Each structure stands twice: as structure tokens, then as C-alpha cells.
Length: 313
Image (cartoon, rainbow, N blue to C red):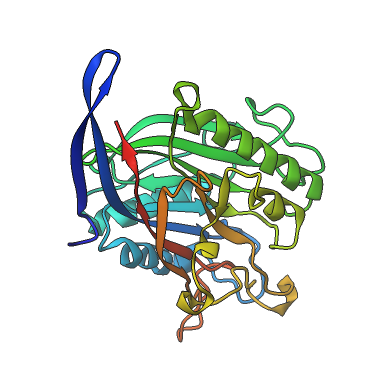
């Protein structure tokens, strides 16, 4: 069975209005999150300009999604021109074609950084798309609490066209300066998960994944809130045995030692917690520099291979 395959087993169930069908399936997905570093006009030491980094980064995305049409790519620090470059680069070589959801954080249109989610429309139907600002006024472009920058959460509700499985996809980039902002943003995200995943009075719960650069290490408050037992989600990596993980541990490297120490701040989360909706097959933190000496970004990509399981109607 290939990664694009799934199994549907229907069985009749009865309700007050008669007989309906209940389905059981397993659906393979590859999830990727990568902070690509915005295209700056004032590069750091050892940082190459975007035109040098772009083809290498696009090749990374093409390679990591080549064998799975169900993949989602979640990126951070993406300016509008970078977004167009990536979309064009993916679609120049990929079949079926990619599209994205997301807006610029500064004005809700094209200004400022995006946290986009890339998907294939021929594989996933987009049912709903929403941007929340991680602030006290989440419906309008705004900066919250002690944040140094405007921060957003990109959310999409998707239906897999063949299997009819639905899921919630989320992508974010928490603030690098404000610890209060990071914790309050985590609370907004968890409330959004509760709002979108509980259906029909809580009788049905949609699966969800959350990707992003959280600027929070595992011993810091935002990560601990998101991965707590009371949270609706849990870190994908914790599903794996330590010996089964591939690649690096740290996800932020910088371009040189002047950028600060390496750290682990980029994560993939799965939910709903404890509902046995997901199985994790593989987890990896990929290299961001090879023997040509060019850093793709000051972050490394995080990749998770997961199987969405369970029953639905």
C-alpha cells in the first residue's frame, strides 16, 4: 500500500431517523513546518540573500513532499514575494498543483509576514479559512501584551476528497520577545482548537494539527501550556521512542554563533489529546546547511509522518 492509499470500511449504524453509515479509515499524511527566514535587506553574518536561498529551500520542500500528495507545508516568516516564489517553484515541478491559505500579518492582506499553509486543492477541499491575531483584539491586525511584533494564527478546515476525512490545520509564529504574549497566545490557540474541533455538542471531535515556530523551549511556559495534560494537543515528537527519531535535536541554529545559542523552538502538535486519532510513524529535524555552505534558513525543518485513524460519519 502506498502512502497515498487509505482504507474505508463502511458499516451500518442505526439512529432515531433510521440507518446511516459509519466509516473507518487510515490516512497517511506528511506534516512539515519550517521558519524560512524573511527576505531581509540587512543580512546577518553568513546569511545569503533570498535569491540564493530560495531554490535550495524549494528543492527541500519538493523532495520532502514528492511521495505524499496528502502533505501539508507550514512556513513562517514568509513575505509576499517569497510566498509567490515558493508557490511558483513548487508548481513548476509538482503535480498535482499546490495552493495556500494565509495573509500578511500587518494588514490582513499582503503586508508583513505570512504564516501560510500550503496544500493540494485536488486532494484537500478547503471548507473554511481564518486568521486570528494573537492579541487582546484577535479579529483585527494588532500586537498583543508585551510582544515585539504582530503575531497571527492561520487556521484551515479541510476535507480529504477521497476518504472524506475532515481535519483542522493550524500554523503560527509566537513572539520572540514577550513571554506574556507567548503564554497568552498559547491560550488563544487552545481556545480556537476547542471551538473548531468540538462538533454537535461535543459528540464528535475533529482531528487537528498545529505547526509553528513557538519561540519557546520545552521547559518554558508557552510550550508547557500547549503540551500540558489539560491541553487539547500534544507534541508529535512525544509519540516516538527516542531511538526512532531522525536528524538533529535543535531546530534553531542561527547563521553564526553571534545569533545566539542553538535551541529547540519549532514543533508539530497533534490533537485531540487522548482520542487515539493519530499514529506517528516518523519524526525528523532536517539539516539546513550542506557542503555548499549555504544556510537555507536560520531554522531547520521539522517533519512528521502521521496516520489519521478513527471512525466518522
